[in-house]
Length: 215
Image (cartoon, rainbow, N blue to C red; front, side):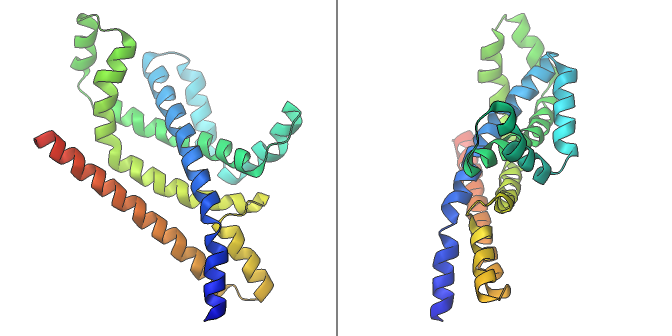
């Protein structure tokens, strides 16, 4: 029993890195994803952005992470730490999927809203900020919750470059104790708990939006 408690504490110490990766990469993913969608809808660099999204969605995330961690530093001339490399790689990869989610949300809106904004001569920035994006966010919120959950699970790949996250801590315990079953089960419990928490927050936000809309 004592060993299980010790293992829980040690593996749990990796939660901080996992959450840092999730929040950092999600920030990049949302910012770039929305930007890609707006530029693509506006016709600016559409072929270039489509090409970037196609490459990001068509190559393994582990390859992109390895490229950022091992190749990019040799190009830029300085070494990225594990956290920075993970945030950049996961963030850019997530941006490709978020861009597609946002694109679907934009296309679900009536075209008349864009035409009305142009007729009223509403500046493009305010049109997107005050009219289009709030509706898009409401429409795509469930899909975004799913993307956050998927991104959380993908952060486990940071273990391949030595990131001391939940998965890496579990691997260390397993190697030391020659027992993979218990450490991996503990890691699974932590990931599952985080997923349940994200789902809980998502449901709370949706209920809040529903009450705000009907109040």
